[in-house]
Image (cartoon, rainbow, N blue to C red; front, side, top):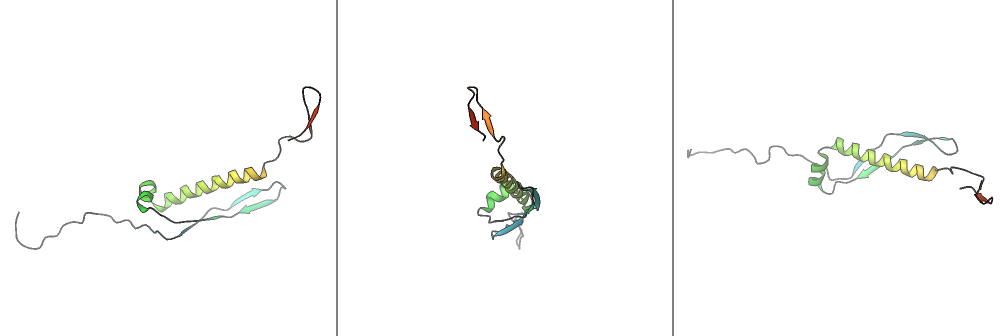
Length: 107
């Protein structure tokens, strides 16, 4: 219809999602580990990050909860692999006897 008067149109964007691009802090859960000297340690960590590409962030993660879960899993995995690398104990110690009868110092 071509009626005269003021018309209202719905906006192109129905929902506006605001994403905070400032520095974000995420605290990971405390984790208790036993050191190589059998001492109990409590590992407490935090992560600081900033969203540099809001569109990619939204397309990939959709919300802060998903982002926090994924970041925490990555951090825990990195901590575990680093802890394993630093606390790895030799699989055997002492001297090993070779096929020819000579001995080799343990690993």
